[in-house]
Length: 486
Image (cartoon, rainbow, N blue to C red; front, side, top):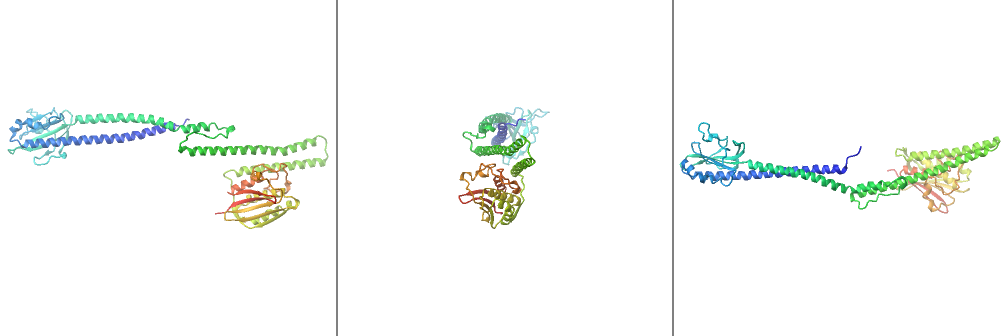
């Protein structure tokens, strides 16, 4: 199933964000405009009502209202939305302007409009100040929304007239509706445009990722040396490219190491098999005596032992490289363990005319069995290359940073170019591939399989430590460095 497009998802998210912003901004603008229009209309209504009441208060009587009607209606002239009705002291309509059937309804009996035909409005007393709070809202007879003020005016003869100043809000609501429609259209168009532009910009921004993917697709088993090279990588992707290249480098080194290991393993396993096959073919070429057959079987048994040791070493290396490899760490006396190992190898050393000496004192925290195996491999290797009459020194010492265990033997020095590579699997400085008799080796020793030092390095890596070799004309020294327990 194909995954969702990242560019499309980001474009949708960008569009949703834009829509949210447009809704919030549009709502704010709409409400602000509505309030501004309402405030302006309220001001117009209040000023018109105040002016009309002041003009009415200058008139003498109800007859003057009709006589000076033009003077009163001048207050709302010039604004077709404003309307006015003036009622005499008897409650009958004396003046009307621009009503258009929106205000007082005519009386059913007389047909004349009266105060009783007005909607229930708050009536402002003649002596009270007219304010915006006095404005009322109602619906006219034609269904139009109306806002207005109903106030009394004291004539000069003491009679009270009533004035209604109102504004038809239809044009305002129509204006706001059109404004809202335009906001909606602009919002929809803006969101679509934002999504389209966002998608294009995001695709352009993600182009380095596509280049990285295209470059990574060039890496194959036969081209592990290929690295991801993308020009002008954004700073946010530099760490990704560097990590991928570092991963490819580790994969290449691991693959090369595995290839070399496989080739060396095949070569080393082929040698004892070839020896057994050749010996068997020679023995079968003609009848042999019982002693010769026994010698053949003994020789083949030695080669089988060699194969067994090789397979056991390979299996140990495979298990040790597994992340779940279990170590039983404990603290013990390193010098005491060196003494036990030297005693175990005493017979082999005597056969090789080599002396063993243990010195130093230190406590180390490590897996005891792995410790014994590492030191045994080094000691077996030292016995193999120490000339007769030589001496091998096993020493334990501690510093502030680490506990060091060394195995030093006399003999031919190891060339400097080989000091690091001797810990590689199946690597030998001496191409003659000499071996010790299998009967004298401990369980941890590997004889001539070429894996002894590789196992030592793996054991030290499991402990978070290290191993290195030092060699000069006087002696060769292998040093195990165990980290101090915290």
